[in-house]
Length: 407
Ligand SMILES: NC(=O)c1ccc[n+]([C@@H]2O[C@H](COP(=O)([O-])OP(=O)(O)OC[C@H]3O[C@@H](n4cnc5c(N)ncnc54)[C@H](OP(=O)(O)O)[C@@H]3O)[C@@H](O)[C@H]2O)c1
Image (cartoon, rainbow, N blue to C red; front, side, top):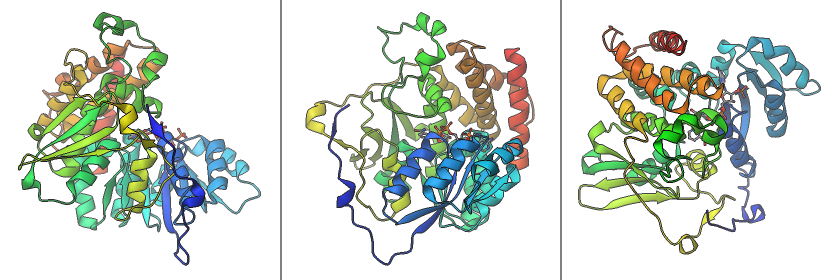
């Protein structure tokens, strides 16, 4: 990775007399949460974080709430309330707990909600934010995978803006420039290929024995554990195809995935006139987060710069279907509909945690998704989930099926 010196924060001028935009940060203790805090702290007063949430990590949440001067900190796990309250003693920060409190926080007054909870747990709070008319910067791709049609309809009805944080979608968002979809031939999402791309170093047979530590070692990105494993299986790219389908109203056959090990080009829009517009930046989530926070303007950031001359070459290749079967499985789920992508997501979440606990081997993760999908195909799941309750009911049944299958 070649990165040129970044701007000095002292060169970034504060904007005199401008009120900060208020942010609610869901999933503050995670990797995207941390990057968002960094972007806000470097913004020199253009943004302020009002509310931060986590699941049960109360000490870390309290530390972040103090760091950003939040008004409120919320844990989803009610049992973590006392610890959070104690960790916030001596401050005026309000503590709250429980899933309802997270949803209330998401819906409370703010200029932007950053949705960075991991997994299907992000669905209810993010939809609560949309319903309350809050603009959303979306990292939680699982929202769209579990209930994409519902999500898009809710955002349209509430007339709110959804800005994609996921780097590939952020790239497409930038390259699309609000152009008419009829001018778009296809979109291309890039994938690093993760730690097991290299067939010489990791022959297919060896993947059965890889450890969680091997799979968590992403070559370019620093991310939370779930998305790191999803990158290694490339289920992440499969989920991103589903995410892009909903975000950009793009049919599956007009979306392509290319492996690009340098992770500099994040997404490409190919137009019908033969032009291709690509977005490039260092593999640092603070870039797409800053794009979302500042949109429609751009402001200087302190993130590293890409030195193309030093990098020398950028390469692209088609993903190997034998190495990355999860991509095919995700496309099959997308063809089946929203109930199927929901089931795939749940099966994948359960399989990833089982792998991280040492309960199943690495190749089993994609296989679980495929087996649960095929077991589910004979049943009536009620079509596209039309409510959070319907989406969560499918999710919990698919989790039960996967847990049983893992045994
Ligand atoms: N990391 C990246 O670079 C990256 C890039 C693109 C997209 N994304 C997407 O962004 C999302 C967040 O990823 P991440 O890597 O930041 O995850 P992460 O590091 O694992 O952090 C997850 C956050 O969600 C909270 N959380 C987990 N379960 C919850 C629940 N049931 N209720 C409420 N909060 C809960 C966690 O709180 P605790 O700390 O208390 O557990 C934590 O704050 C994912 O959807 C991922 O696919 C991530």
